[in-house]
Image (tube, rainbow, N blue to C red; front, side):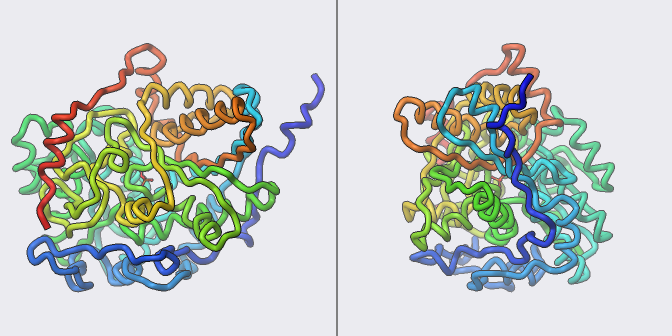
Length: 457
Ligand SMILES: *Cc1c(COP(=O)(O)O)cnc(C)c1O
């Protein structure tokens, strides 16, 4: 069989010396600043002191920073180099299977030790906590990727790590729990009886499958009750989105190597961190008038905070312990169906993504999970990577757009974040491949009940 010349330039690799050495903070480049978080009691903007029981000062300062670039500490760069710069691939074989003129690129974050993009923020978070003398971090985990990433980072910096894993995912994914334990982390099924929030919320049978909101309440409570312990969040907050921008900074250089400009950037959004990480550096170039891609968020139809939620101040957790954040939310009481993309089952959206969405700088679409897995299987059979359930939402929209390009003939260059692999999510593939996966329809009553819990501010 002759060599197929069209698939030769499949991979765009940077060498270590080309790894970005600063994260990009989009806030100073936006036409308006995002609304500040509010104290849950006084409804006044929170100050750094309010956040000190939760986070180390370095991260609090990043949360409110007005600096466009923030240097990545050398110790963090050293660890990043184990898997960064990550590869950018051109999906030639998927393009062929779709018979599309669209060019499809994916930035692959599954090469990290935890198998997802989460290590881009777990490593600096553990680093700053260790520098400030903290002994232990608590956190929640949905699908298990964040818990794995944080346990890995804590092991490197000699911190203890305690994880509340959403009940549905704890039951369905024993191997994620074991990987967290292999890295030295301790895992509890949430809701647990170890915290007041867990005991209170766990008393309601409707909460037995757990949710990210409930697990956050438990991890926050455990952190604020001990002065040597802090809490770490794997998404949503400004500093987390900041750390993920290394993805987009690398991808900008790699698209230049490929000699192509994306017309569409599409990523999945749970809390918004991988999407922001890929898209914000491109949005900077777009706001500067250099490129003009559409920027599109893919969210699950069963938890559609951007397309079905409201833009309002709400709690980040179910028990109402976190500051109030202005964001797209389905209501902090909303417990999504236990869909397979556990990492996308969050009632809210990053305040920064919500703000960018309100400014009209990006779009969003909701996708049902069977369409996602159809795209995932097609991707696996052509590109050879079994995606995590979360990025299959972005792949489904990439496929829709690639097929549209075939009809319209419009020049289409798609860039997507393949933010993790699905090696621990094969139960989801089992459900799909054996005809047991359904598209859950959320009733208007359930949406209304969730929205009714949003506090009046
Ligand atoms: C955590 C996670 C998500 C969802 O979180 P974002 O902050 O929206 O990125 C998506 N995909 C993977 C692989 C994850 O681990």
